[in-house]
Image 1 (cartoon, one colour):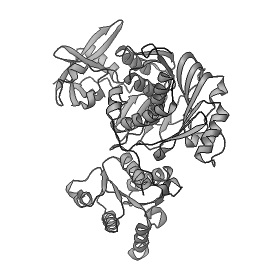
Image 2 (cartoon, chains in turn brown, orange):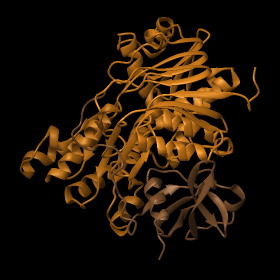
Image 3 (cartoon, rainbow over the protein chains, first blue to last red):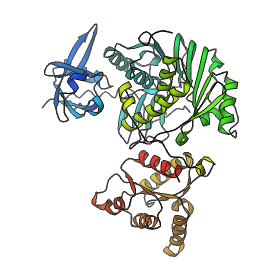
Image 4 (tube, one colour):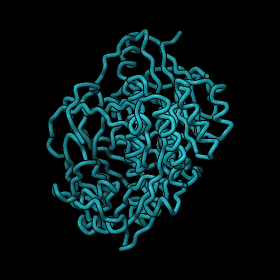
Length: 107
Length: 410
C-alpha cells in the first residue's frame, strides 16, 4: 500500500505571490443566519480576526463574520493580508447552508 | 451512559495532503482528518491524534480555532504523507518520508482508529472502531497491544479475506470468521455495490448501497467509518442502524464532497442501488468498452476504464485489448458480435470518434444500456445520445459508477 514516490510530493508550494493568490474553499462553520442572506455571485470581505493567541482569516458580510477560512492556502493568505494586500471572497455556491467561495485579490 | 454533549470521540490516524487532477482537489485531510470533519459536522466533540508537519499543524490549528468542538493532540514530524491522484478511482502516487514514527498512544472512552502509513496507534478504549486501511496487509487490531472492551471492525471484503488468510470464503462465512478471529463484537464488511454486511450477536444483516448523481470517491471510506463510529459509539446501541446511516452519509459525501450534518442526513433520500438476483448469485455482467484508442492519451484512458471496471467486479470487452487494430474486414464484425453479446456499454465520447458514435448507436438500436462519459463536447453533439436514453456524465468516476449500478440491476 505505501511506497516511495519521486513525484507529487506534498508540502507548502510557496505560493506567496500575493498579487496572484487565488483558491476555492468552503467557509468553515458558517453562521446559519447570515448564510440565508448570501447569494451566488455575492462578493464578501476577507479579513483577520484575533482569537486568543491566533490570528484567523475570516469572511465577512457588512462587517459581520460569516465564517472562517481553514484551508492549506490560509497561511499564505494571512501573510499577504499582513503585507497590506486586500482580498475578497466570491460566492460560488450556497448548497444546504455550505458556502463555497473563490478567494482572489481585491480589484 | 454519558449525555450526548459530554461524549467525546477520539480519532487517531493519518492527516495527509491530498491532490486530485480531475475533479480538481488540493487539501489536507487523510482518514483521520476527514473523520474529524465528519463527526464534528454531526455535532460530535472530537479530539484528533496524528503525526503532522508544520503546514498541516497550522491548517488543523485554524480548523480547531473555528470549531470549539474540535481539538487536537499532534505529534510534530518533518513531512506529512501526500497522496496524488489523477482521478478518484486511480492508484495514487504516495509521497512518504520513509520513516516510521513511534506509535501514538491513546487512552479514551471512545476511539476511532485508522491504520496509518507512517506510524501506528496503540489504543486503550471502552469502545473502539478500527478501520485497518490496508489493501495488501491489514493488521489485526490487538497485534500492537491495543485493547477495547467493545470492538467494532470496519473493513472491505478484500481486507477481510486477507485478515483471515482466505479469500475464497463466502461473505457470510467470511464475516463470522473475522469476528471470531479478531474477537470483535461487531464487524461491518463493505461490499461495494452490494452495500455492506453487519455481524452482530451472531447474526448477519445486509445494508444497501445508494446511488448518487455524482460520485466523489476520495475519502468515501473514511466517511463511512466515521459515521458508523459516531452512530454506534454515540448510542452504544445496535450496529445495524449505525451502518444504515453510514451508508446514507457516504452517499451524501460522494454526491457533495462534504460530510452531512444531522439535518442534512435526515433530509437526504437517495435511491438504493438495485441488485438483481442474477448479480447476487455471482453473474458478472459484460461491459463493452467503446472509445478511441489511437493516441497515447486515448490508450491511457481505455486502460484506466478497463482496469477500473474490472476491479469493480465487471467483465470487460475492450476492442483494443481483445481485437486490436486492423482492417474493417478484420475487426468490425468481431466488435459488432461483442456489442450483441455484452450486457451494457461504457462509451468514451470526447473526440467524437466516428467508430464510437457508431457503436453507441448500434447498442441503443438493440436496446443495450449505454453509459457515456463526455467532458468536452457540445450539447448539440450529444443530442441523439441523450434523446435515446444514454446515461451521460461529464465526470469519469461518476460514469464508471453509473455503469456499475446499471450492470448490477440487469
